[in-house]
Length: 499
Ligand SMILES: *[C@@H]1O[C@H](CO)[C@@H](O)[C@H](O)[C@H]1NC(C)=O
Ligand SMILES: *[C@@H]1O[C@H](CO)[C@@H](O)[C@H](O)[C@H]1NC(C)=O
Ligand SMILES: *[C@@H]1O[C@H](CO)[C@@H](O)[C@H](O)[C@H]1NC(C)=O
Ligand SMILES: *[C@@H]1O[C@H](CO)[C@@H](O)[C@H](O)[C@H]1NC(C)=O
Ligand SMILES: *[C@@H]1O[C@H](CO)[C@@H](O)[C@H](O)[C@H]1NC(C)=O
Ligand SMILES: *[C@@H]1O[C@H](CO)[C@@H](O)[C@H](O)[C@H]1NC(C)=O
Ligand SMILES: *[C@@H]1O[C@H](CO)[C@@H](O)[C@H](O)[C@H]1NC(C)=O
Ligand SMILES: *[C@@H]1O[C@H](CO)[C@@H](O)[C@H](O)[C@H]1NC(C)=O
Ligand SMILES: *[C@@H]1O[C@H](CO)[C@@H](O)[C@H](O)[C@H]1NC(C)=O
Image (cartoon, rainbow, N blue to C red; front, side):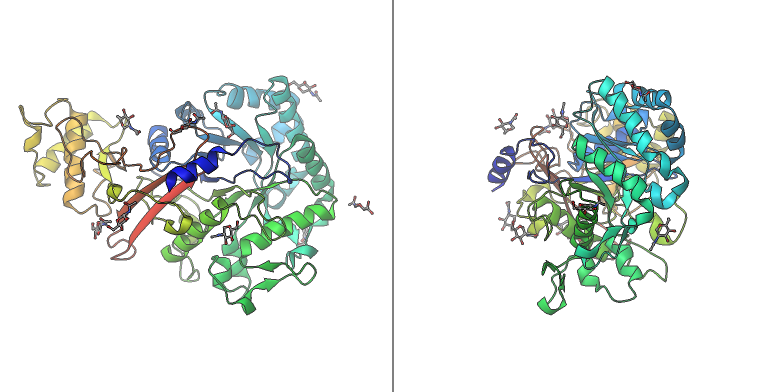
């Protein structure tokens, strides 16, 4: 059972990043921050821990978040935002300063494993294209000087739209306009054992295909054999868009004579909500895509061209980003709302992972760290008064009296209210001072409503939390999404991160 699964994972050794080496792929999550009620660093890290997310990518190098990620075992990819690229690409000293402040200051406590230099620069900021390679080289020199170049990889995520003629994959090539950038960049990646970083969005490929790409093919759903796409040059069969795009990238690299650079997918996902012209942005499709993607990646399936070669992938994204402009879908790529509630819960039971039943439905409502005590007191008074929560366990002599402070008491009352409201959306907010967690806040004889007690295999609500850094962690969390998108959908989340 799970023990065997762990044992298999423990057999994994860090191999040089060569395409001929096969390591286990991992799933990570992107953390965007265009959010009006951005959770604090502590809340973000609690969510990552509760979900056993072991790999994250940031779009910057936020100091507070990097500090909160220290000593958590979570692997972190930081980024040079596009608006800092020009300065860094034009000055070795600016690059060295960036590395000192944003990387050297945090390692080894925070396990920074990669630096993304810019984001989709060729397609979104083409004027900066000529300096990407010098930015990469300057940052690399600074890492070499700090003796960190072996443990921290450098690359620059590309949009898959720089690959032209991507089907059949064997005919794909990079838009030749960019050869003067791609060739030196690929040389750098090859010589430093880094990855080609690629953002892969079957959602957009499907949407822009005018019906040529079947939805099932985009969502990794089984296709009848006559619907599978076959590359007539290689006779390789493609059962999903994701693999076809990754193989197109391998072929595009071969076209430039680079055949041993591995690929890391820095973004992939599916929006759960869209406007009237985005009818395939639904909770069901988002759940199907991300669940199948996770299963596909963690199974180390590789691609038809390179079976068994790990293609580690970061899901886009942790939170819905309500402040993003554009169509409704732009704001709805997240697995979670800003308050930590899942938007939907992934179906991963087919992943060959078995998880304990008694962690089911265990979510709790607690006070946010750093909440204003006056607001807590007001919310506590409301919950025990108009909110009709039974606050008698908080009275002197009763099991939840100690510790006698507003944080502990409001946590009890908020959770009691949340459970009384059947965890309905919005019932764990209290004007922004409350947040959802999977960690049972019960202590001693103070058993919180919704707690299933402490017997059996339950371990703080995360049933299969990683026990050490080289193993995988999986968490199951059940959540009733009652009425928010679909009235009776109970979705199961199980996120696993391997190595
Ligand atoms: C940091 O992450 C790397 C890559 O996963 C791993 O090999 C290393 O052991 C980690 N370091 C620490 C201190 O956890
Ligand atoms: C850039 O700075 C590094 C130290 O951070 C130094 O080793 C390297 O020689 C410098 N490169 C150039 C081109 O000035
Ligand atoms: C190749 O890239 C150039 C520069 O961005 C762009 O103008 C051109 O349209 C691209 N070619 C194709 C076929 O997309
Ligand atoms: C790739 O290698 C082949 C054979 O050595 C050569 O003919 C071709 O010009 C090379 N292509 C590039 C882009 O360097
Ligand atoms: C997992 O990998 C095996 C081969 O390694 C393959 O036969 C199987 O179809 C894969 N499962 C999924 C869900 O990708
Ligand atoms: C979970 O519960 C179901 C039904 O009660 C049972 O068949 C299954 O064996 C349980 N699984 C575990 C891992 O306990
Ligand atoms: C989880 O809770 C919902 C209602 O809140 C209930 O219908 C469902 O059976 C519960 N699931 C499990 C596995 O206990
Ligand atoms: C559960 O939480 C308690 C208190 O926070 C901690 O001491 C314990 O180590 C945790 N157990 C696991 C398995 O994480
Ligand atoms: C990881 O944990 C397992 C089970 O707790 C233990 O047997 C193993 O020795 C640990 N491995 C490392 C590298 O600490």
